[in-house]
Amino acid sequence: MAAKQSQRFQFDRLETPIGTALLVSDDEGFLRALDWSDYEERLHHLLRRHYGDYALDKAAAPKAITSALSGYFAGDLDQLKKIKWRTNGSVFQRKVWSGLQKIRAGKTSSYGAFARRLNVPKAARAVGLANGANPVSVVVPCHRLIGADGSLTGYGGGLPRKQWLLAHEGAAFKRLAE
Image (tube, rainbow, N blue to C red; front, top):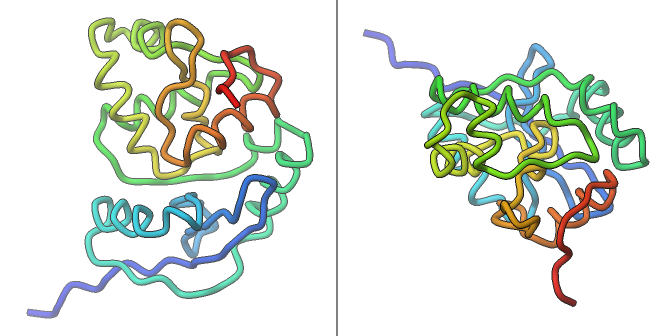
């Protein structure tokens, strides 16, 4: 019996105004993961969870991904819609991640309101857990979920990044104390 082949992905870095983004893509040009260099260990943990055995080859990310991300960070907020992404996850997680893309730039939702929109009104915590397991942050805009009182709540890349992203998009929220 032949040994199972590990999945191979391309690995690249992109400098952004809020730190170095780690980009994992596949040979079909899909973004598989986006995380931050100060959370590289978490990136590997999520990749193992989603794909089991995997290998990363240092290679330039597809131009479509880097151009769209650079455009977004330069102020063209609609650029994120151009990025093709694909990831593993449970049916519920993928439902949450797909739903997040329907929250427009400059808008936010509370976890409870978002759960109601997904027709799972008692699942705000489950929405939060799925949101936290999002492997393609920024592109799947998990930063757009905030507390019911408008406060910033957990973000895998750190609350200062979440605040920057929401301010960049022109969203209303309670800013962190300086």
